[in-house]
Image (cartoon, rainbow, N blue to C red; front, top):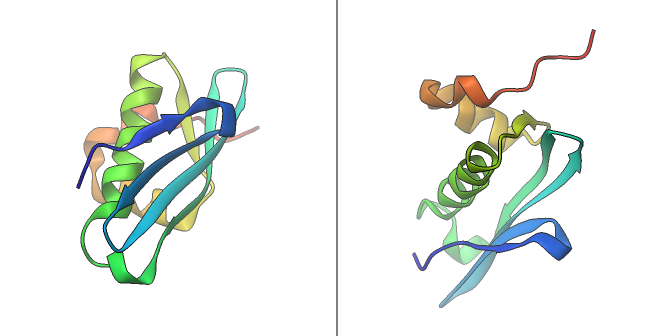
Length: 94
């Protein structure tokens, strides 16, 4: 996969590949990045594109001192499968 591109003005990370595209959409609330949606075109499913996009978002959060709330079920599952991302997880609201 070519590198995921960050589109901060659109609050997303995207990958455009032969055969389709994928994206992770997020919103920022202070120091919390909420990943709200992950999607890849059907032609790209099963190729690891969604995981690479979520990882790019997590890397961005880490590099910028943000925590992450994975509202998207795919992002939540990804973080559960990759325990090394636990330190990025935003505390649940009290």
